Image (cartoon, helix red, strand yellow):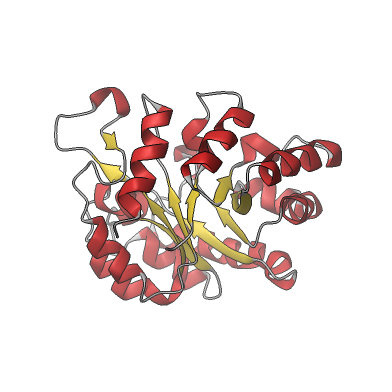
Length: 253
């Protein structure tokens, strides 16, 4: 079975993380994906303590999200975090609405910024890429898409494909797996509830409980360089349900 990871952002409202690590280990997860809120402010002792908690539960923080600003400003700190926690992949995850370019040239420029940003991390041996949301698939005035412009400006970075956000952006995930498959090194595995359901969870669903054809999507992703399949749910109401249901579903794909 492919190793399954878990994006810890999903559990931010269900503290402490030490308990979450225990639940994940018992459920059979082998990897987790971190985000800045977990480690950006930790010193070496704090990072080593976090690593110890993961080790104790048979987990590896194989990948991590770091904001673009942090990756630019705090290169040595970012590298140190990745090294102590045992990561192999670093992804810039998001751009706040007020920072997003409004035209193709702006997105091309952002891609060039990511390309430059990636260099010290790639030089140190890390996979480096961009993680999408829905806004990258909204057509610009010139007819192009931000996702196209980003990768045009950053020819050497990879893509952590958040499939459910591709769908929420109105795009066909299979077409994009086909088009950018050579870039995909990680995939976020999450699900979208049927229309009108799970409103208290922002319309998301546990993996296998929603509308996305995950068996077919995993089959398509197996033709790419995807090495991390990362369960995520942006606003789960029940963390135990999310953890156990999602891995049970994934085992069937």
